[in-house]
Amino acid sequence: MNELHFAYKLRQYLNRGLLELPPTTVDRLAGARERALARQKVAEHQTVLATAGSFVQHHIDSWHLRQVLLALAVVFGVATYTYWSADQNVAEMEAIDSALLADDLPIAAYTDRGFAAWLKSSASE
Image 1 (spheres, rainbow, N blue to C red):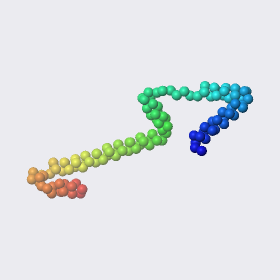
Image 2: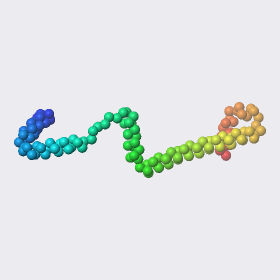
Image 3: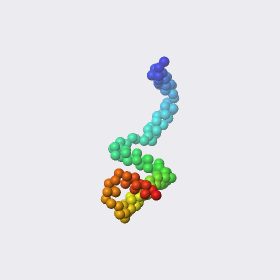
Image 4: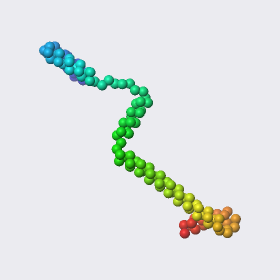
């Protein structure tokens, strides 16, 4: 017996049992059904933008203060590290440029292939 056949037989059995109920029970069931239908929420049609807004609002409402603070702390940490790293790179370039400008090297030294290696080794010392 497949599911569809079983559902059909069950429906027939329940319908036959309904005819055997006393009229007062049928009236009470009809009243209960009408009260349930009156309380049932009616689906409202929304535009796509309203649906997207309610989706975003639902997710924002479900955030906890700790999650928001943690996210802000992570963003602040990443921004601070990026600023500090860029500042370090600028300081290194500034030191090399100052050394180059203050030194009395001939122009030919700047075109020498080993000059970049000398700059790196002197900057690390």
